[in-house]
Image (cartoon, rainbow, N blue to C red; front, side, top):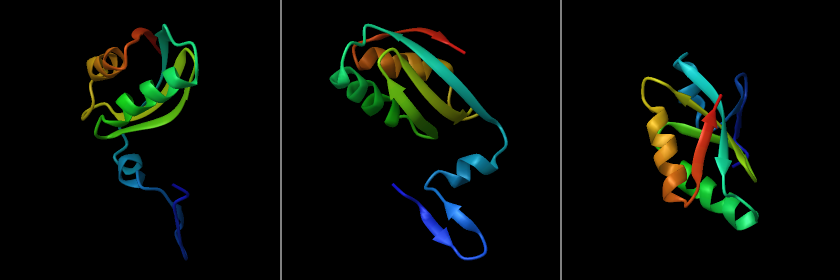
Length: 92
């Protein structure tokens, strides 16, 4: 989604309300077992189901996410990766 340009405000994204809360946490997830584009799509789909989580990027073996740590817990990320059929090995 490209976002909406509002005169005097600039570009707004659908997740702009998350950015205002101030408790945003950025993580790079290391994921074991991913080998192809289908793996990437599966992980992105499962992570995208988590409310209040912004999936910034998913590549083979990693995912970059941003979330309000008061609303999303890291164990939810591990469960989503597991539901996609892979294993979360590290988050930093």
